[in-house]
Amino acid sequence: MLRQISACRHSVFLRASTRGFHAASSLLTHTVDALDTNGGPVREYKRMVQDGRLIDDAFQRSIVSKLDRLYQDLLVFTPPPLLFGTKDPERVTAPRGLYIYGDVGTGKTTTMDMFYTSIPTTSKRRVHFHSFMLEVHARINHFRRTHHAHEDPVPTIARELARASRVVCFDEFQVTDIADAMVLRRLLHEMFVCGVVMVTTSNRHPDALYANGIQRESFMPCIDELKLKCECVSLDSGTDYRKLVRESARVFFAPITQNTNDALMAVFARASQNAQVQVNGELRFLGRSLRVPRSARGVAWFEFSDLCTQAHGSADYIELARHFHTLVLSNVPVMHMDDRNAARRFITLIDALYEAHVVLVMSSEAEINALFTGEFGGKKEGGCVGEEEVFAFQRAVSRLVEMQSRKWITSGRNDVLAEHAQRMDADTVDQVLATN
Image (cartoon, rainbow, N blue to C red):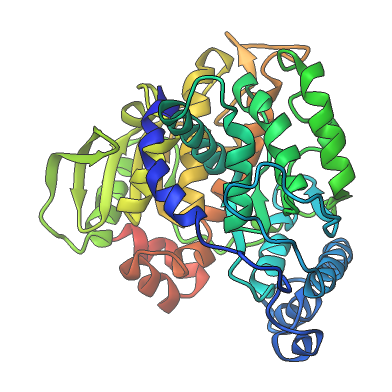
């Protein structure tokens, strides 16, 4: 149902896809000489280390060097035009992309973003992979409503995507359901045929994608092509840099007590500048509505049960993150394998909030590292059952750690909390945010 709902976004995507290359010209509008002025990933990495924004890491440095090599290749790569009405695009040998995989928090997204911002072209796109797949299914639904039943939507959609963006950067590449797997096995092939260059991050090696999935053997050609078109490199330095940024600006509270509830109310009042609270408001989008129990001045307050035990999905959470710069989420319980549906929604919610840099204020039954047990009814589950949930929750925990850091608050979308966090030393931020 979510994919049908998302289909109405397709007209926007179609308008965007008509922009791009209509003539053969160098992919990057700058020459090699421009490297000295604009700099590639290596130069940007050195600058960030010198400025103290990054810790020099040999593993990250090796990845940045490979991204710089791709940057140099793109400077001289001339893709063929993709003209409307062309059924069989000219096959091209595009530069080989990069598939960066490794543990959470090791800097995969940081290095990829460094590459993305370095390449001087408008024909590029950086998107969270989950959002990308929502878009793809929306495009497919629209195509099927507007074309004959025998027509294949995948090649057309691939060309539309290639016209709009010749370089695509995916964050958090993962495949967990058969619908995505069956579309991807053909879509990525068609995009590569069109000369799209792909850089992606993932917590898994390509060989581990869609592990134990239904009809996985049908997905294996996609894995093989990924490894052919992208160099697979591991970024496992053993250091989770999100956990190093521990100057806590207190926005996470555990366990749940009356003091915790009072603290949440105090932060809500400060974040919304004591504005008048709207009760049970409605957020309308895509022909549906989402009830917002409490909101004021860009700050919303939900119970965990409001967002994660009811039938909500990615589209709801993305819209929520677009509409509110701060979210208070109260009474998050410890989740077991019996609660896997709620856990999946919670993970999807955190992904949406993280991508939109929403400030999250949260109360939970336990500390974030203990929120998911990986157990059924108190007993540890063996084998591969629930492996995807456990793995995904590890990523969510790493993001939650980063989202409670002082750095996250100061660079966030809530100016009031950012100003207070910036003014205070790390030792006193806890007090300031929890005091009304």
